[in-house]
Length: 188
Image (cartoon, rainbow, N blue to C red; front, side, top):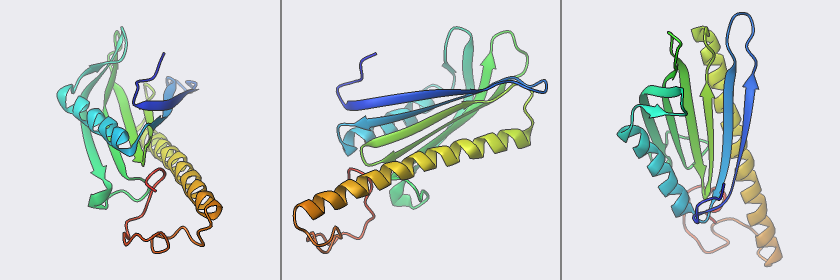
């Protein structure tokens, strides 16, 4: 499927933890998207947040829906996110047609400069609260790990570019900038 004109590249990987001990499988997908600019990535984050506000029930496919969705956004300026410029969290109930009990559904998305990292977790039927918490924490650590790698890659590229141009330091003072705000990948 082609990506929108505001996206340079996007990669999704899906994972399944098979069901065991009377519990169903857990489905996880992670998507990394490189937008054409930080502004486009910010717009993507805003659209993601608005979508859940407009549609607290969303159909995932012919037999599955997510209901009772709630969301929360944390922009960097509010200093509630330590690993990204912005982050979003959504959660709700994952409902499969023909099954009596809903399952937990979690979705996380972080932005660092022009890059967004998103993870979706469709939890297992029969999962206990502690299992849900453990899987949720693992998904959040995974998103944080990918975001940290994106940040390190951006910093390495900025440092290499500064070295190639003869600059002695990639610090804001050396480049003539008085800003003390931390920079993320692509914000240079």
